[in-house]
Image (cartoon, rainbow, N blue to C red; front, side):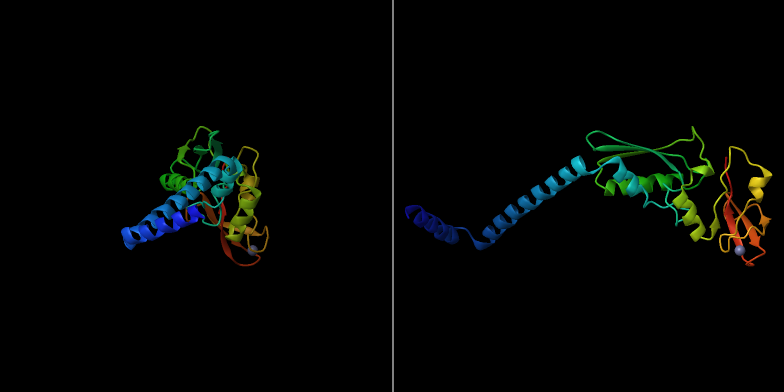
Length: 211
Ligand SMILES: [Zn+2]
């Protein structure tokens, strides 16, 4: 009983001697500390337990190719490697753009960097390399479907060399017909050519095969 009385007494005294605004500030500070601790703990748990290389690849699947916004850089085969440090504090990403003169390289590096910082990784290093040049077989099956949806004929799969059959093996992305003819070898960008479909009478672009 004595303890309860004592507590009551301290409470009354504190109400009298501590101005209410101060009390509010104290509550606010305590609340903040609890919130901050919760947030820190949340980020710590998320970063140390939940992030895996698979999460990084999944996140990068939402980073679109600046030139063809319906296909991700992962599906284009531009992201060639992801290495996550054992404590999950740092990630190293390697990428190879479709060609070395690509004007969007810095933009792509920045997009990858921003996306992974958003994911909660403290340090992100993106390195562009052309040691092993990009080739159009690196476009994933899902990527090829996305190109089709965009009205862009995907490049035919090659065997390491450009042959005349390869260049003639063009399918209309709208109707699937092979009855197509090339209008010009250079479309909106160097990597695309323009064709016309004699079956559905529509013009379309093809992503050229690159070996
Ligand atoms: Zn067609």
